[in-house]
Length: 251
Ligand code: PEP
Image 1 (tube, rainbow, N blue to C red):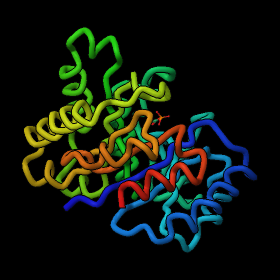
Image 2: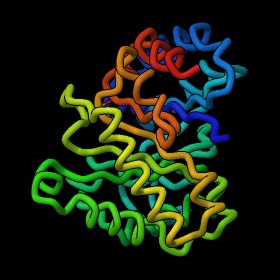
Image 3: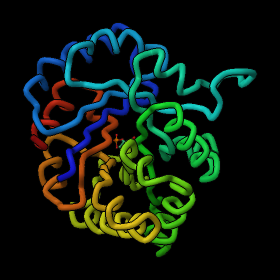
Image 4: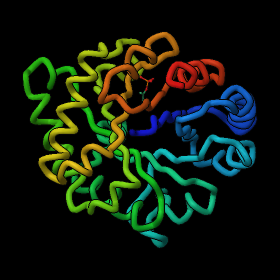
């Protein structure tokens, strides 16, 4: 049985007062949420303040990116050790916005994944095809490449600290959600790729989150699919009540 993992990706939003207020409002709304794991991933500058606001709750703290070195002359970057120091237990790696706008390659993302795990963080590793790739018929090839190259070299024990987020790029921030059938088909395909590369045990234990315009009113039908093991939520996570609504739909 895979425990659903529901994570908020606040992206480049919220100054400290707003972030702390949202975290504070979320805490009581999800205090009774049982059988799910909840993570909030704010911007770096508010991590410590949000961590304090969430202290003692059932909501963990995560970050949206990290680099492949512990410290040194890497202007503008942040290390997993620094994220842990700020209270993070999770980090998102490979979000499509990192791939698209910051040209992060499969090889770099694989390096980030290994270093984050070695440093003691848990990782939500994002994959997903663009609309052109889906319509052009290369979706499966893209997912195969992202899984095979992105997860390359992981051991079975590493997978205890990894979730994969399937986020079709055409559904992110667009209001267009994959249908439950489209999500299930992609998730089952990804699980099959993981099984082929890492074996049945790993594949059956791996949580595959769906991301792309998840809202309180579509979460229940998506989570009902057998291969959908949680969500990575952007827009609808910015308000405590809508993020809590998604969590309630899962519980
Ligand atoms: C995301 O960016 O990870 C995401 C899924 O965004 P949204 O929920 O806004 O589509």
